[in-house]
Length: 464
Image (cartoon, rainbow, N blue to C red; front, side, top):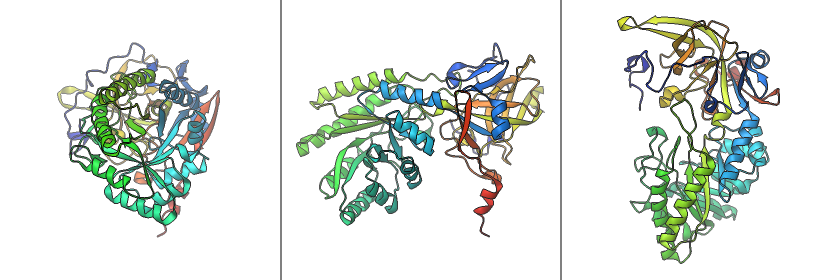
């Protein structure tokens, strides 16, 4: 569903909230599936990794992204073990810093990067380059050159121009580029249109139906310095079942079969992407990694048997599913305002010290989030509230609808779960707001892994 073109204030809304939102039995309790695995309330105060969030804010300031290291590692292991026999690629675009890259390497995962910046973080972390893949629909010559020099495991090619660039670089450097061909199988994933990536009308990949994918395969096969490893397909993000993978796999393996018939050689690898969903609110029901793996393995095995193919080496890309639930964002309340609407209805606006500069997803994707009072318990009656940011936009909304205590006041802390993916990565300096710190917590201790920006940082970029 898309936001109203004229902004939030013009959209059809109800002060009763969405149908899935229910009055909480206990406004002080956490909904476990929304939070990282070490999160808990003690006398109403939210703790993550054994660290009380009021103490964390006192030391590190707010807003702050709070990254639960134990949770992150456990979810990485869930995918590593659940998808045994697969190569599991962590999505650098979801959230990446040097420390997280080290965790990914230690937990046995591969790493997907899509810019020179993400590649530089991997290099700084000492990440094994043979476990890195480079994505992107418009990779520069510089990015491709650096990937070749570092020896990345594979480059996922996305256009004929890129194949030409990569071939020229391979000839110039004498290096061989291992490549995957990204294909679009014409599958409509049931997700937001901006994060559905396997239908025909979008910027990624080579179309199977038009014949472009087969033409790309032939071009790579006939070009010195390019080693074709397999096909890559990614149907979208925030996906909760494997129905879309079944259709995509059938179409991609049909192309595998055609390539094998034409060349006499079967491609050794197949990357089915992923983009598995997480629980942002109680309406979301993510699948267990082991179950997803079993279903995908069955789909591939049956489709390969039907086409007389050997099962290739399989890869998946869980996307937000590892880091998304491992992080929450803590804010300080600045103002609380009751606004009268038509018909005598009232909406309570809770303004916090962050907003769309640290989480653009609500405005960009019409995303839903939950939140909780994090600094104390409350016996006050609940009010349906809207948590909004401090920026000069009516669409600066963090949480569209949530039940919060009616005595919420300036100085209270509220925390929003599920902010690990695409929040810090897509953060901006809108209104010249410095981006928040990322604070990792574990076993009662906290440490900054991405420092808070300062006004001096902002002014350093202004050379006027």
